[in-house]
Image 1 (cartoon, rainbow, N blue to C red):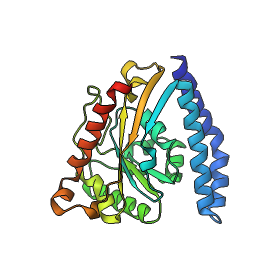
Image 2: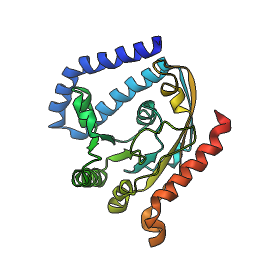
Image 3: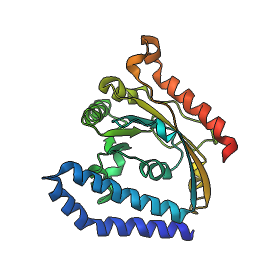
Length: 244
């Protein structure tokens, strides 16, 4: 419980103290957009790493060398709020996450998310959802990676289980030509969700798969890309169970 309170205070303090920082970065972005982008990225990454340290999270990372030095579409399984902290703190390039539109309710948090290229998906409105996907495609074409959890929501089932992947997520890679990087995560729900409201010391495994280029697939493979990637993640999670 103490760890949870410390992390909550850290988040509140960062958002509050970050108000003038957002103003300064907004001004800087008018003249040096990329410089400001990376400053914001590194600041948030530092905060996330500190929160993970307070949480007592030990992280084993496998295959990070598989991530190419170009804009990519990250796709992964999703079982914890900490999945965002774990993955975003390791991004070397500018990366925006696709989040549910309900996150727009939270002032300051939504401002930082927008500044970091996050997109807000309306899962109940197909037309608005398409607009979000088109915006994500534009981000990738302009050198910004996108991370999406194709299950569409956090899965609170048994460890190793996954909800069906939404195939629309992969339109980002299909239309932009960027590689897909599968991210497999083990044991992340043990940080927080499995024993709310306590945050506990936990060992998690993150593995980055080899890049998948849809342009190199035949038509049948492209049609089943969501199942193909989900199977890769499932097999990797199962493989890494012994490491937790």
